[in-house]
Image (cartoon, rainbow, N blue to C red; front, side, top):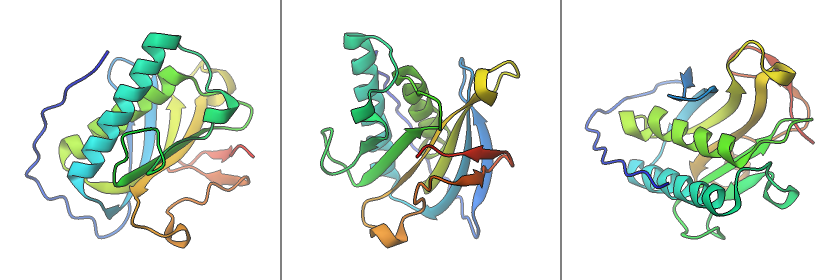
Amino acid sequence: MRYSFNVTTTSQINLTAAQIFKFRVPHSTVELQITANRPIDGNELRKTLLAIHDYTGDHIETQGDSPLAPRDDPFAWDKSGPPPPTGVYLKAQSAKDEQMTWSVLHIAVEGLFLALPAVGRNYEAQFDIWDWRPEAQGGGFWGFGEVKSLSLTEEESLLKLPSSNYTSPGGAIVERAK
C-alpha cells in the first residue's frame, strides 16, 4: 500500500540544542524516541522517508511480513541503494536479541515522517523504536537508528552505532546489538 502525503510546511522550527521527544505512531504500538539535531533539507528528508516507506510497503506486500534477514539488518538506505538514491541516509538496526520485522521498520519510517518533515522539523535525528505496551516482550525495545544528510563525513556521523550499553532519549538503559 502506497501513501501519498501532500504536506507543505511553512513553519521554521529553530533548534538551538538537541530536541528530544517521544512520538507514538498512530494506529500502532510503535513509539519512537527521537533526538533531533542539525538542520537538513526538508524536501530531501520528505522524499527519502516516502521512498523508504514505499519500498518497505512493497516488500511486505510482495513477500509478506517477516523479520529482517541478516543481509537487511541493519537496514541502510543511502546513495548505493536500494534505489532511488536521495541526499538523505537512513539506517535502522535491531536491538540485541531482537529481530525487527519489516512491518515495524515500515511503521517506524511512517512515524519519522509524521514526527519530522510533516510538521516542519527538518532535522537529522537519532531514534529508538519501542513497543509502548507494558506487556511487550523483552521490554519492548525493537531497535535504533539515524537519519542524516549524506553530506556528512563518517567522523561527523550523529550515531556510531556502538555495541555497548547506552541511555536512550527516554532514559532507559538498553543494550545495542553487536
